[in-house]
Length: 84
Length: 131
Image (cartoon, rainbow over all chains, first blue to last red; front, side):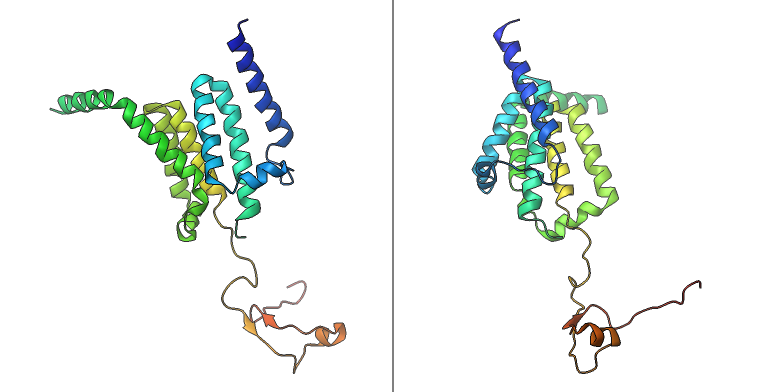
């Protein structure tokens, strides 16, 4: 098994674990820095750029990253802006 | 004639495939980053079943005809757009609330010692039990 496959597996499992532990919980306690950084569009742009690059690299990783990013965006968006 | 046009379009698409894909990436990523800036009057359309059908269908079409990555990004945009659709407004959040004074309190207000300052509606429909 070469280094690239190990790296793919590592990152995919990392986001898989992240989704299992943190995904779609209303009371997800994101780290403080992640909450503060969400206000900056550049941060979101950076995350999505990494997402695109990661997705071009590995499809399984793209699915897991997509879930993680969607949950992160949605949770913070609902927390900060949504009008009931 | 139709086959010729189709061939021309396919050739044109293949020629400019890379720039088109990059432009689509930019448009989709910008849409996701600024999805919270969509005005409320457009966000309300997220409740529309037909629009949801079109958006999800479009996601599948993009996956099929453009690329898997674009479909994934568009799908993320659609889900975020729908999840940010404002919910139905609850009581005391609409514009019909009326200001009242406590000069003629109801019996339960008198007993409980409360004084309401605003009501959502002046008309109440009641019904006897068992009817």
